[in-house]
Length: 463
Ligand SMILES: NC(=O)c1ccc[n+]([C@@H]2O[C@H](COP(=O)([O-])OP(=O)(O)OC[C@H]3O[C@@H](n4cnc5c(N)ncnc54)[C@H](O)[C@@H]3O)[C@@H](O)[C@H]2O)c1
Image 1 (cartoon, rainbow, N blue to C red):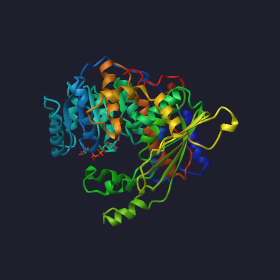
Image 2 (image 1 turned 90 degrees about the vertical axis):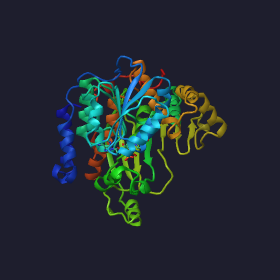
Image 3 (image 1 turned 30 degrees about the vertical axis):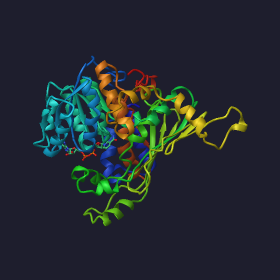
């Protein structure tokens, strides 16, 4: 959508609902950003973008907390096989970089340089001429400034989720990647999970027919971890829940769905509406913990509905305040089949109306589909990765393996800059909709119309 049309539609929508921008309160800034940063022209599409092969990828990691350490471990196989090498590590805590360096010393003889003396020492890492790829695993608000700084300094970037937290930052990431011609991959590991890859493979092989609807989520009881004194450095995650309201963790559910639906590859998100429930779970827990912050703006459950340009719908949920079993839902509905996750179940439409109906496949038939449509990369990497740490049941290893191997071979990355930015943008847009009584919000087109082309899904056909 052109800047003028987009402006009109946002202004029109707000006039229709009797809202002025100022009535949106704190989200006034967000809507202003949305308007001010609506895309003009693209500076050269990054679809299918690749660079010269990098036979051994030289890596720097910023942020060595929970996630940074897991990502470091995922590199072990690649280091051992001369495909990657860790050059430098950075964190604001000296004990964290030291611990990670000790871990690395077990499988890499060359010692990394450590940066830990200030909040901006990571910039020294980003400026080094002997690093190709910077992996970022810091709190959310640092992802965009770090990613941009790294690209400006000639580095490819692998950023933890989400890659951006405001619409303005989404545009900055796109513009920087297009101008500097650097990869900026948001490392959404759930796109590499065995179940999601199996479903994707079945969709690509036509098992589902035409897709109409999908559901995804991040339903994960994080109360104890968020309220823990030291689990998240400085309790950064808890502060997000005190200050904002919407879906903060869109990408684990939405990333795989975007691949199922061909988003950026013939379809794109058109608009969304979002609604949060009242907040109870985290504040009750905070009282039990006698935590000084006992009021939280983020509702316990956020429901966001997204419609695509081609008429598909998506329900996306977010709840980390409630005691419940973990789920990303992973539901996909097509004209010939339905999948529902947690636990995984498959329905295949019978050929005649008398076979239509009410039952998931029984174990034997389900397992037949499991075997027949297992994704090729799972088959290959299950053997390759034996004896190495897997991370979240294997998906973390496959993600890092693919990122490094694509750089080694000079192939396009599986998740391009437009994917990561679009999946991340749902957070600020959900906040905007929640603040405006679930007003329908147009989702910007970050690709400059390139989504209309049947761009191939680069993912994992070559390894
Ligand atoms: N994909 C997944 O499955 C997954 C799982 C867990 C976390 N994450 C993501 O990883 C990121 C980090 O989460 P976490 O659980 O590891 O949090 P964490 O608090 O354990 O780690 C963040 C680290 O960043 C460091 N840091 C903060 N400011 C810094 C700065 N200026 N310079 C250098 N280092 C700095 C902190 O000291 C800390 O060690 C988040 O974006 C989170 O959403 C993803």
